[in-house]
Length: 199
Ligand code: GRF
Image (cartoon, rainbow, N blue to C red; front, top):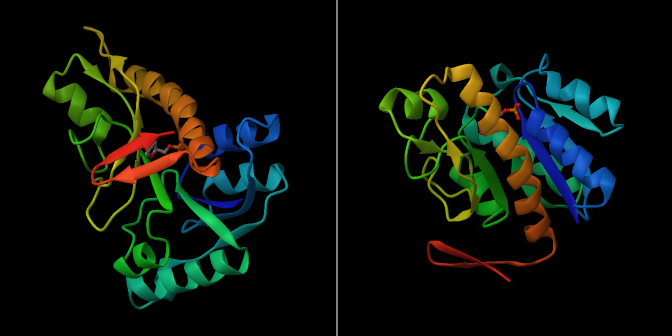
């Protein structure tokens, strides 16, 4: 199966996926890395791994849907069967979601449904939770809302800083995201309402 990874930033999750594909753990091909940020380090990671990249500047598009149409067109050209969001800092339009229904996944750095939004790690730390951790989930029309594939628990320590906790949450992301992708690619995920069965 061809997959595409959409990133805006550093791309440590992209790197974990690249490594998992290379080792054979994830039986897929990364056909395209898409970014809305031409200076994203994730693009350097992709190019170093010999993966084709596609960069779009949101300023060149009047609406979110026009931007997404261009993305979808290029995903289809590459026969992409799974869209992997990895630190992609844009909300996906209903058009995109319809075109790739139940074939878009995301990684969120908190245990959903807690701490949705862009500051999942800081919000969890500030709230004082004792356990947090990443969630791999399907993407639907609502923000950080789709059916959950995998989660991992990360303990919050008494003297944790945002940076220290981030490092441990990211480490857990790099473990569960390739695993979730592997399950999808192997056809082992079955969505039943809000629940995802792993076959
Ligand atoms: C991760 O923490 C992920 O949970 C969130 O964005 C961050 C991306 O990090 N959606 P990276 O670019 O993969 O290092």
